[in-house]
Length: 104
Image 1 (cartoon, rainbow, N blue to C red):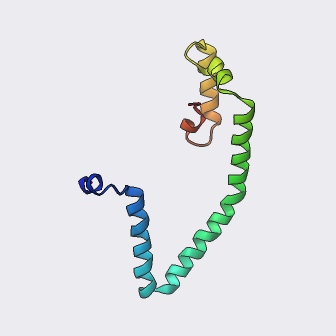
Image 2 (image 1 turned 135 degrees about the horizontal axis):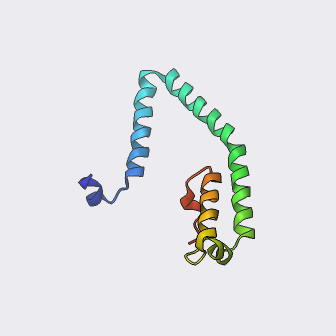
Image 3 (image 1 turned 60 degrees about the horizontal axis):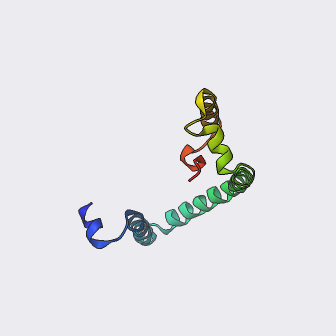
């Protein structure tokens, strides 16, 4: 991975271009496979859209009604044992990475 530091290209860009190259080569080998793969990917994306909209509304609601100072009051360093309880319950209820719930 030393070549990434010299070229200033992130791994995510290399991965994306690599996938484009693989699809380009596979298109000439078996175009039906490429079209089937892209169709299934699109169907999966369309199936995820309603869930994403719901999640964005929930995130908007939480960010609108729960301000950072209020969250720090109940989950901050001085919250005590009740703060630990709230943190454990919130960690159980979160269905994604909890790092996104930490106010910065």
